[in-house]
Length: 131
Image 1 (tube, rainbow, N blue to C red):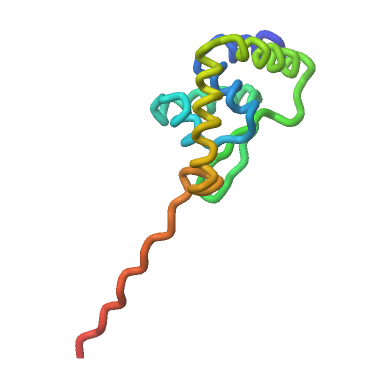
Image 2: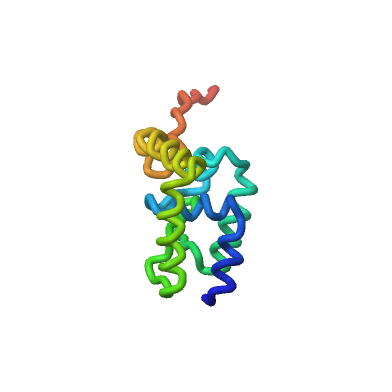
């Protein structure tokens, strides 16, 4: 990934917020949607853009995609992500995002590791066949 591609990815506020949140650990679209207060379609679109430019890594968990920052990063990407985190600590919007994430993380973990995991459906009573 070259420097121009990195800066093209970083030029959008929503993508910056997503990358800042992923510094806290892996998250699914539902997590990001709740924290950012944005529609699922918008979050997914930005994640697809970041993924296409190798700015995020993804893995499948059952039916859901879980995103994280890439483990293997170019020096340029690593430096820019570190700069983003330093700047995010000073910005009220980014600090508020991280605070919301921390407040919601307990609820995510109580529900399940992946907030969009379905809870088991209650069993319906067995119907007795008519004779």
